[in-house]
Amino acid sequence: LHAAGFRPGDVIINSLSYHMTPGGFVFDTAAQTLGCAVFPAGIGNTDLQVDAIAALQPNGYVGTPDFLKVILDRADEAGKDVSSIKRGLVGGAALPNSLRAWFNDRGIPVLQTYATADLGVIAYESEAMEGMIINEDFIVEIVKPGTGEPVAEGDVGELVVTTFNKTYPLIRFATGDLSAVLPGASPCGRTNMRIKGWMGRADQTT
Image (cartoon, rainbow, N blue to C red; front, side, top):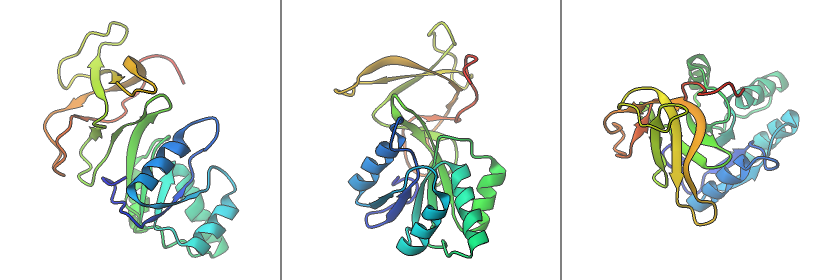
């Protein structure tokens, strides 16, 4: 959240689900730790969410990129003012360059995260927008699918993650997702390992 430009005192609408999946709680907890106020909107109820944004004037959005577009389109149709939203942090769905450009044209820079239900946020974009920076709480490896053997730096392979979280430790957890290491440090100044982002699946899971 901090890398995406959120700061203490910001008001965030969180449209990730608070039930059946942990996404809503992951970002809610992080935002409150940062010192932000959170409107826990959850998923759906588009018209109510548009009304809430117009009334509460949050300056940030957390959720899927496609639902942010749905909200903005519905607000335009209804003549509601949702221009208070000045930045977004999205995940859970693809963010095509065309959609990112559409948000930028509306004055809403949007950065994305890569996360799983088991681990939370594994990697995230910064303002540099050059790859995704690995969460400092994780050890990430890129391996040959099905073998666990590391691939050469820069080669595409399956992303496996180790976390020593006392509540839910995982050792070399295979995500089933493909990525590759992006050499060097981010121009934003963050020095942790970077990956190129989500590059497909290592299996046939849809």
